[in-house]
Amino acid sequence: MSVINFYQKDHQVPLEMHKVRVVQKLFLPSVEERVAKIREAGNNTFLLQNKDVFMDMLTDSGVNAMSDNQVAASMQADDSYAGSETYNRLVKALKEVFKTEYFLPAHQGRACENILAESFVKPGDVIPMNFHFTTTKAHITRMGGRVEELVIKEGLDPDYIYPFKGNFDIPRLKALIAEVGAEHIPFVRIEAGTNLIGGQPLSMENMLEVAKVCRENGIMSVLDASLLQDNLYFIKTREEAAKNMTIKEITHKIADAIDLIYFSSRKLGFSRGGGIVSNNNDLILKMKEFIPLFEGFLTYGGMEVRAMEAMAVGLLETMDEEIINQGPQFIEYLVKELDDYGVPMVKPAGGLGAHINASAFLPDMPHDQYPAGALAAALYIAGGIRGMERGSISEQRNEDGTENYAELELLRLACPRRVFTLSQIKYCADRVKWLYDNRHLIGGLKWKEEPQVLRFFSGKLEAIGDWQYKLADKFREDFGESL
Image 1: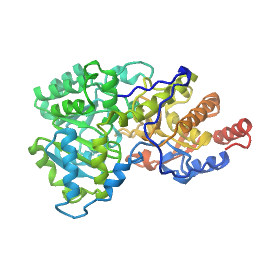
Image 2: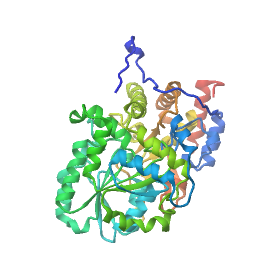
Image 3: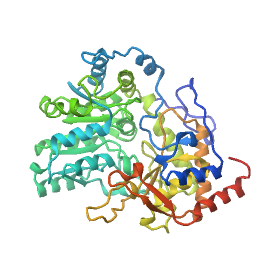
Image 4: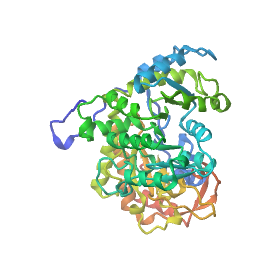
């Protein structure tokens, strides 16, 4: 992996290893307009219109910049319903990346989760994982199962510096298997890059150990590889055993040990779509019938063929160290910039995006006023920046209707790959710093419209009091006519 240092050490910044050839114009509404827009959206950044967003840091899913080779490949798409050459090219790429024989296509990662749950989860089952993702948990609980989170304790401490905070707690995994019985555990799910606790990675050693425990107990091991590319970068740069391995060698070593891998190519592969791969035909046969039922025919699974061509190229590009290092380096720069100023961040910098510890940013705000959601609304007012709440709003209520407060209240500032320039990242840091200095003006939120399932996508909240107008007034006082 290339190392490029600047002559003046205080000018050291991440260097883009690409050039921009297509641009899209951005707009920044006035602060008064931003107050009106976030209130119209029910203080839910998902419900903002993109035309009203200056920096879209909501997610890295489906919004990464494709390479010139991906765009070119998409033009050769074969849109035959059956026997498509596009499908064959994608299967070939997957074999090269994962060394897997069988592939089931799906329109994205959560569709794979639905098929997994339908195929393997029954009432009373327990699914251990290092940490849940929102849709994963919803699919499992919908089928009557429950999630058991077994991330190491360091993973839930935003300030603790540890290279692999997404690791499984192996002794707890073994104890859980002994407690509930292997027959009640259809699979163990490994999330390579823990989405809800700051994009923190697992080590290669830890993943292999989990797979070994599964084999010894006759339990299927499942890898959610959606965020694998960032995790591969961290394994390569942080794990001694992988220092002299290529990205492809690391990927093969992990894939060889795992029974089944699924992914969203909206994250992995810089395109759109998803799929399930395995070398176990018996597992594939259990799921195969659900593809035509839920997704589409077996050669496209709900995906548009041009996206499949782009995915095939993007998956191969994921094996290029100079491509996958861009996201983590920009995230690390943003985390350091804010941490140096005193903004409470999840450390060390992980993948996916920079994560602000909203509980520490707003220490006096109670859980039931949703500090991560309030901070997301406040940041949009401060800079037209759309982040994503990853806290209690992203959880689901308990069966008795009581609130299930998240272990961490985070505001995620996703960094889509190859999308933002360094000046835009610095603008984001500037607005977060201003907001931190004026954090005493930020108030809480309360529910106005609360869906029962995945409420964070479409629910609406309202501000408690008039704090949003006061924040805008302070912005005008400090920035004058500036947007």
